[in-house]
Length: 138
Image (cartoon, rainbow, N blue to C red; front, top):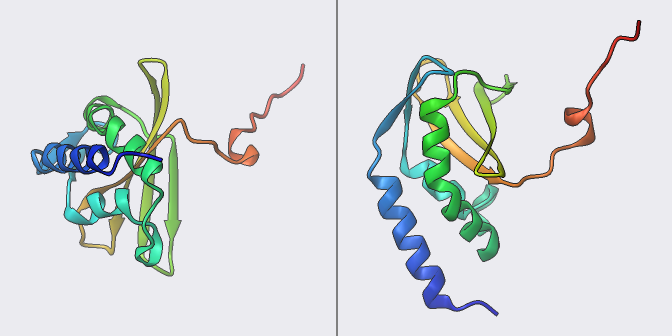
């Protein structure tokens, strides 16, 4: 069982760190990525405002500084997903930093919205389909 006071401290520190960034220029997308309250809330809640498990939240809070660094230094994105029904585009920036696999997701809602931080996945597991590499034999 985890200590509730440790969670509260980690959450407060993560929120303070997150709030210190209004926006960061992303070389991969060629534009600013905004850090909105919606992005921070998504670190805590899943869809329909169901709270993530505390362990998942803590791991996201812990890699937040790496996520910010990755947004500012990555020159390419590795994933893009368009959801036409929602008029939303998601970009995934993937890297291994300090021996840790990390994926940062940013998104744009609507045609006139800003691109904003959406989530960070520390040491995530992807589907086999996304990890499959295709080789052409000789």
